[in-house]
Image 1 (cartoon, one colour):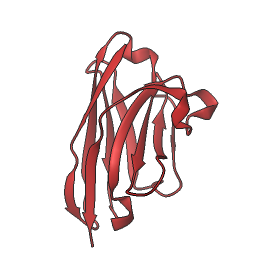
Image 2: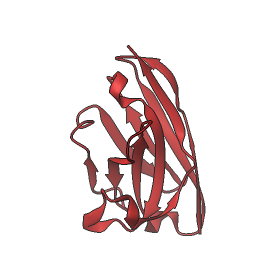
Image 3: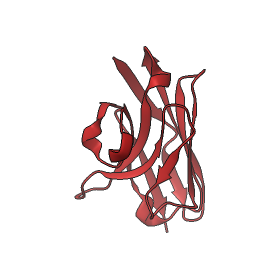
Image 4: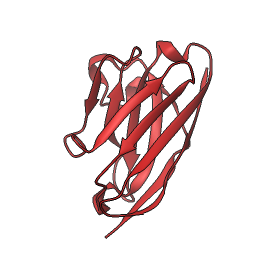
Amino acid sequence: QVHLVESGGGLVQAGGSLRLSCAASGRAFSNYDLGWFRQAPGKEREFVAFINWSGGSSYYADSVKGRFTISRDNVKNTVYLQMNSLKPEDTAVYYCAAGFGGKNYYFPSVYNYWGQGTQVTVSS
């Protein structure tokens, strides 16, 4: 069992930055692949970023590539999402997730555990 708690969301102007954190409790955090997803009002949950168990591989949605960076600290049991050059279309609730994504890392269904989400609002 893994319990995930996101933090770091808030209101920021376009062009600004935020750093989201997701702290995990439970066993074997370092065994899990981790993902960040987001969901805007009236839209489906969408993939944002992925990092594998070791931190050696990461992937991003095209919409955030070059602006967002995912990282993890397996000692602190925490995954981060550094978000730069934010745009109004990045406004959403952001969720972290843990599971064994493998090649299907962009599907929410492959993740076993989810946080409660943190709101990110980007004003124009």
